[in-house]
Image 1 (tube, rainbow, N blue to C red):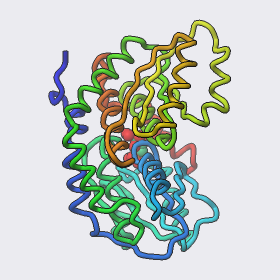
Image 2: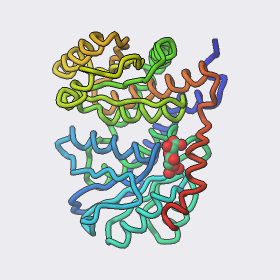
Image 3: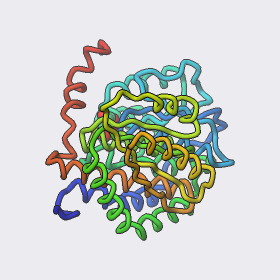
Image 4: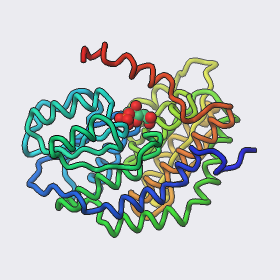
Length: 338
Ligand code: PA5
């Protein structure tokens, strides 16, 4: 069996505490106070997921604002000077994000750029745009904590305290305390998925849509497998019917992500599990830990990230290599005529 810590990518996940520390020490260094109508977060893949996390954190906070997550070269037509737009690209070079940045600027929105390097860093510096620089030289998706705390810190210092510095520091301490258990849980999940193979389904309940999406992306990119996402209670209004007559012979396995402190959430997943089991689909129940939604998101992201890396190792694959994304990026200019 391979040991954690031997490979750099595992260290990138286990190094999340240092990322959170950097996020906390930069908290408040950039502020863009204003009377905003909405927050827009623009970015793709491992950078774009930050927007999903900001959206859920804003939705569970009485101090929240509407958050629009934009994973596109486009931005919503209606944005303007009363909207605060975070442009996030770890590399700073993703074409869709660069195009969205220019479009948001043309519409007069207030911009903040988050990046480690590249075109967007240069663009921010040359145009005096508030800039959050994050650690350089790692895989974009592994920089989630620092990018997330970068955005939450700017929001808090700008009077939109959906997460306070104190809550962010508490979540950092919590994650440090549960690091070992997170590794153990990740191992078990990876082993479950490898044993059952077939199409992996990540199932959960609201408000954890963003976490299952993150998990999907992690298993896509690190483990190189397709993944299906199913979220209750919306699941009860469409997916459930699909499970009445799935094509015979297809294989599936389910990792059900549950917040044990959320009674309706747990019962919704029990209901889903009943239907999966009727279809002879094995289910692994992954219980989130933590007191706040932020803590649960960080814990869940770490476990799913480590599990996806472990699964890649079990399959003899390099978790860091994302050949198809590189191929797409080499041809993206033709697609957009840029
Ligand atoms: O995690 C990854 O490597 C990808 O999902 C990237 O985040 C995605 O391709 C966008 O690149 P970037 O984050 O550099 O803008």
